[in-house]
Length: 373
Image 1 (cartoon, one colour):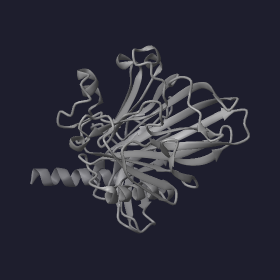
Image 2 (cartoon, rainbow, N blue to C red):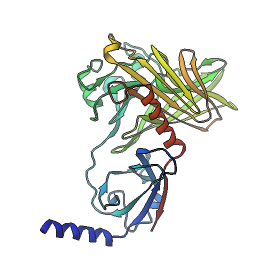
Image 3 (cartoon, helix red, strand yellow):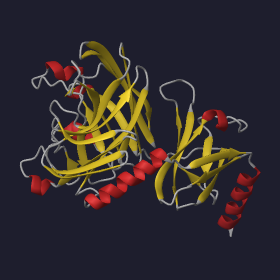
Image 4 (cartoon, rainbow, N blue to C red):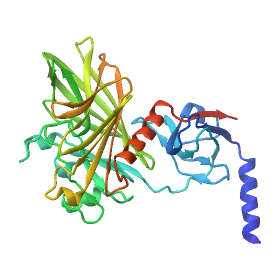
């Protein structure tokens, strides 16, 4: 009886607390799973007394659900995010109130790794990736590449720190491994200029890496590259990579600057032992055997995908599968690149194409959000 009374009292307290109502509508015939909802902080600020430390998101049962305030590398809040499922044509309802935030476990994380030649690594509860930094250029490997590495996972735990601590990440100890070969390529989702029938790779690895936000739902990083030659023109690149919990695709925001009118950019992945490639309107998917493995049959297949609306899809060019689109100086090229593993939640190409379709729907037709008092 005492617990019942306390529960009623808590519900009454919530009902009397100033709140903003949030309607989240899925206007498509596609089921949405764990899709991120984003609300500008300027809308959240209409809630009396709200701060990044006390904002809560309640579901229709007045239960607090995980949320994150985004700062995007600034000192002021920029947006509020949370995740929801939504059936086709369904509208879900939430409330924004003030109160004591629960300690949400992180499901997205990234960091610079100075102890491993300035890698930058990031992950969520499904996938993990890394990029290569300045120190690698003068290391025994002497590798200069824009390519993105895949670390396959079969666990929902965050594993980056564990694997770097042991240094034994090329061996599968039951939760995945690094069995993907990058070299001087795009790896699993980078972009480079594609002019005069060739790829123009950077002269150096990333110059700076700045973590913008870091969980529990989204991790994001801003990376800059020093000017490099593109068919006689110096070009610079700034990119922001964002990865949300429960998703397999990174959002890539790439900005190329230089003295050019327009330039084609190729975004995609290197081809290894390819088993199948499929393309559609604005997307491409591929499956191949584990490429950095002494036993690829044992270590399974890796699935790769790129989503770039309005791009030309080239399934086999210069050893890569790429989406190509023209950009102007300073224009943001936004695309999505992701991966899966046959031992980590993606059984076959059919399932991978479904996941690409879900990610494309979220990118092209996101859930519609209405905030009201």
